[in-house]
Amino acid sequence: MEEPEMQLKGKKGEAERPGRRWIWHPGRRWPCLAVPGPVRAVWYNRTVTDKFTESVYVLANEPSVALYRLQEHVRRSLPELAQHKADMQRWEEQSQGAIYTVEYACSAVKNLVDSSVYFRSVEGLLKQAISIRDHMNASAQGHSPEEPPPPSSA
Image 1: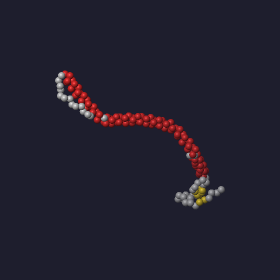
Image 2: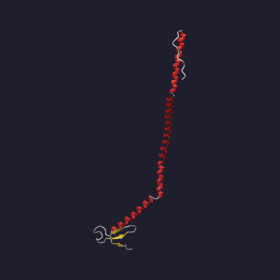
Image 3: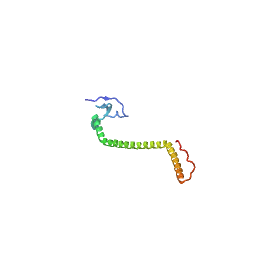
Image 4: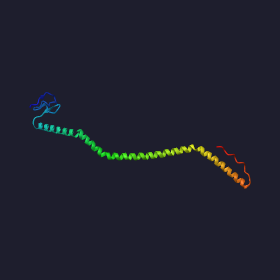
């Protein structure tokens, strides 16, 4: 079967050379410059290798192959991800324990600040108890020191 010739302009002087013409090759979307002789065999070899390469590319990128590659990736990376998850859970537990300790210490300090009223009351009662003790010691020795202060109503 003879291939149809086309009147297309290529590079300057390309189509004017004897033995060259534009033809449509099967499987190509554009016309190619036909060259007679051994170069034509190279062209067909190149076409076969191009088609073979395209077939291999299609097979390599088929969805089932993609799913297989995805499965391989998951199988390889899953143990490492599981280890990271276990580490993160352990660190979270340790962090929660530390947070609880800090919150407990903060509440204890706040309660200490709030109990300053009670400490002042205890201080006043201790001062009153010391003065009563001094008064009792003085009366036991026989001399009377100054009058003890009246008990506070705090």
